[in-house]
Image (cartoon, rainbow, N blue to C red):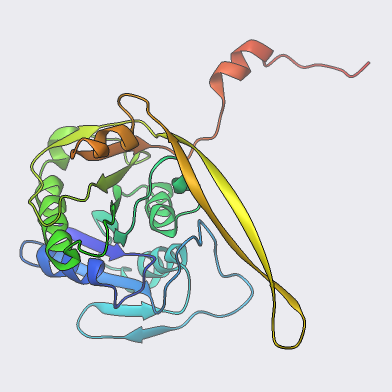
Length: 254
């Protein structure tokens, strides 16, 4: 297949390097990724300035924009004659579960792919503690993604649906089990820390801890069991339950 890969950790991140290395064994891969970290950039586009591409080798491009910029530029400029059959975003260094998908630049690239009508996958590794063997884990993640890609034809997923994959921290052990899941639920206790710079001006850091709800069949619960979570998602924000309740008849204000 022709596969476009991108991420939000930047073109030099270990996750995308391992994914590229593994996929090139069996596929024609084009890499177009941000030239620096773009975590939590969500689905943002750079509309107020020109974007530039820097060649980093054969079919490797760094872009000074967001992950969404990378997908659009690759699709419309780098892939004019040879459109991708699949877009993969990642491997992200850190989870993208539950409400994370609304912030994630990794997921946003897959969203853009689905909008373009191309089957798309976002993949993320849940990080462990300092003793976690990141190199080995990312290599195993890349092996899993490469094997999973081979199953896509039999899944027959509508391109409007993109897949959000989260791989648990198995401390370097290979991945051999996965489960289709829904998004988990959490309360993110955002904390804004105010400090003062050397000039006496205030500045702020946004931080916080997530409190997850244990719900069977969600990405959070499944990955806690050591199983890879695969969540089929769509961009459609319609609340069909509310619409059915409210009705779609024309109304007038009193």
